[in-house]
Amino acid sequence: MNDIDNDIEIEKEKARKAERDKKTLTPEQRRLLLSTPVGLIASGFGSGVAPFAQGTFGSLAAIVPWLALRMLPMQLYMFAVVVAFAAGVWVCGIAGRALGVEDHRSIVWDEFVGMWITLIPAVAEGWWSVVIGFVLFRIFDVWKPWPIRLLDRRLKGGVGVMVDDVVAGVFAAVVLAVVLNALS
Image 1 (cartoon, rainbow, N blue to C red):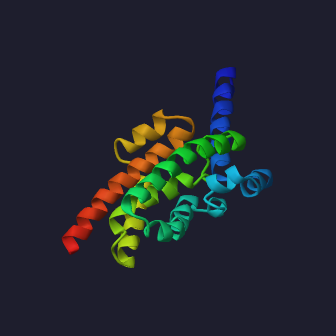
Image 2 (image 1 turned 45 degrees about the horizontal axis):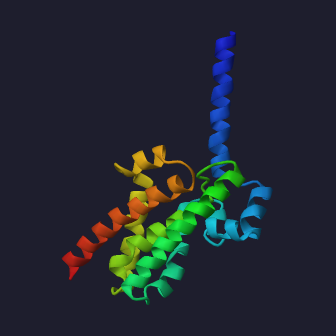
Image 3 (image 1 turned 90 degrees about the vertical axis):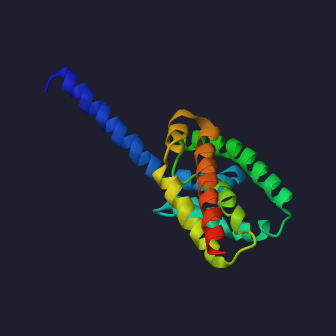
């Protein structure tokens, strides 16, 4: 193996390690997320430390506080979402730097805010609308159609962590509103 091939293999191994680091938590990282206010919020009150499907667990956990949010007048609900977004930019940025991975899978506050946006049309509807909203949000969050994928790749820091899920939430909310309208 020549030097160039060796350098290529080293870079490939670095890329594989970075991808593994994005998916797993060390005991120290887990402690950091669960023992600090910033970590607790960024990890969706601990839902992001699930051993797999952290985004799905975070999205499900977001339904619990949404049950209280949905009781607010719509203007206050929207204000709460804006405040949660602003707080998310800050806490997700700090948590990403602390974990050494900007958008670590255990950071799920963005799923909380995305779900709260998705569920706006479901505020006055039955439980089945929450299920449909959850499924739609997960589809858009995982699939990342344009411009979500572009935003996910281009924006950095806490803004980058939050914005793609906000846009996924908007897309899912629009589809949910259409579905609910068609079913009524």
